[in-house]
Image (cartoon, rainbow, N blue to C red; front, side, top):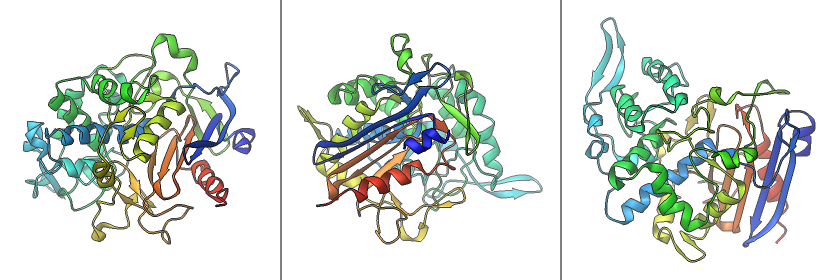
Length: 381
């Protein structure tokens, strides 16, 4: 980790390993803000991007345990606009060839990224361009979550629900489902039902003024060894997190600390329980962390990269030790964020790993894989 900082590949980084309920390793290296000369600090705030997704999935399962939804309910039951959403079969001389959903999109499809939605990162469908056109809406933080989701519902699906896997804005749609069912803004639901019970005092959809001195600067890198600060208003997908938002993105929007996210990971490792209570049942956690992807759709691909995991209800899941390209255990689960944040939970080893930094894009940087291997090789019992 020190080498990543010395080589100017990462600005600053924190890593943590917990085993059998005790911190086996904690390290902090480099700077949280190079230009300001601020070293990385333990209570630094990070844009955790897609590490927001597991929290949104937990919110959905809270509603399921209360009998307020079934994960095989049609999405249109809660968001009627998706009842009119068509499926793109291709493009012809008369434009897009569209068909009705068959089967209809369900909450399960959203949880597993088999809904036919996208992020606009690829070029294999004319629908991808539609997603790229809403990028300015995503970062201005002034359009409501309802506006965003109903705009997405106007786009055709890239494929019939359940027939393919594509990482997408599905979890942002799930966040709006939570709002609709609970009658609460997503941020308030998170605070009342997840953050307060778990003691996650620094996790929110923005960094308030009294915590701005703890917000780590996010950096970009056009080359492997050339990092530069990204202005707040230009921060991809989520915009300026120093300002409140009316569109809390359940797929990418949260700011958090290493300590807060460790509390969330411990709740998952402890099968839904925490010191003083229980968030979800043991059976629900087992269901969430099982592979839900049919064999016919494996292996999964994220862009050009083949994934070596299955996918559950909000997490990637190790299904076969001989197919995973890094040290792991069957049943280990986790995910990462676009600015190189990363976590995993390994029930077989009673083990949690966490890494926090702020650098985009994720792809060229092997820090998370190296950290995993270093952590696992240290196990001696």
